[in-house]
Image 1 (cartoon, rainbow, N blue to C red):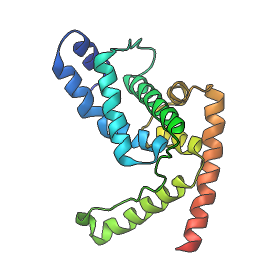
Image 2: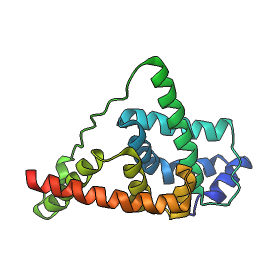
Image 3: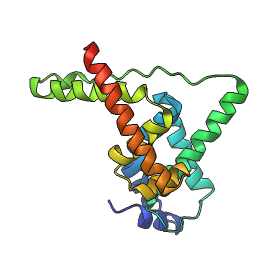
Image 4: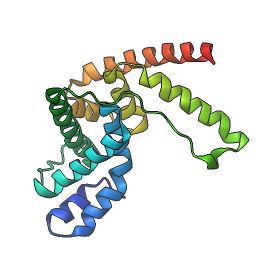
Length: 182
């Protein structure tokens, strides 16, 4: 799929297939990103759906100054922050415990070690500061550039570079702690 900009443009011009392409290409990544905010996979799925509903109803303007993915994740971030503000006013707290479940079809010996490493990585990332998790997620799992991350997180490029550096140090420390307990 392209970067999503042409699909969004086609959708705005009335082609519903453009919107379907956007959902197909970005839904899973958006859910995983939003899960970093709310720490609840079901809620993250709902917020991703809300993000797509916002694209349909409000049709926010995409200027093209960033990638479409950056634009979409910024819209999703705003939806998540609105949700968290509402929840804070209600006095409810998002569930902090999200347990990683592994599918049974990954029982092969070769994949076992990779899965263990992923579990350690996810567990280590969950104990890090939210800002650190988000920056690392966007940089390494979503493959976004530092300027794109800065736009999404509403920080300067320099701040994001420092944040990623501190996040890597924190992750290294967390992984070392995890290795000692295994």
